[in-house]
Image (cartoon, rainbow, N blue to C red; front, side):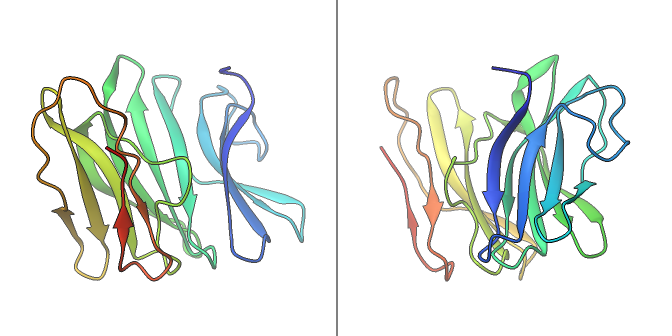
Length: 173
């Protein structure tokens, strides 16, 4: 499926939903590119967080428990094997690019973000057949590699997930 609304991420109280869509909910997506939106359940209103073109897709949004931060992956249509990691501070609509051209950048479908939104885990490829788990820590404004896994030709996706307090990370391998 490539047409519609995808990958919802919900705040702790259910009042705000972040999701990706190729619809024009707020009048800012006339080209119907895949963008990140917020839906506020109490006001039934939408806010468009990303503003790309049909040459890019914004996917895999992760919203913090209280809704102050949304992380997502941006990819170029002509270079889907690499992605950029983006953070939007939703209260002031400040967008920061945290990492660019990350090979095989992947955010888990489930929890990838600590409750306070300060820590995010993801996987990326560092060499052929060698994916690793990374942690972005906004307290230090840094990315840190958490694993040192050997090269492997056959394996499952690492799918890293983080605890609510941001102190523990689990992964599949």
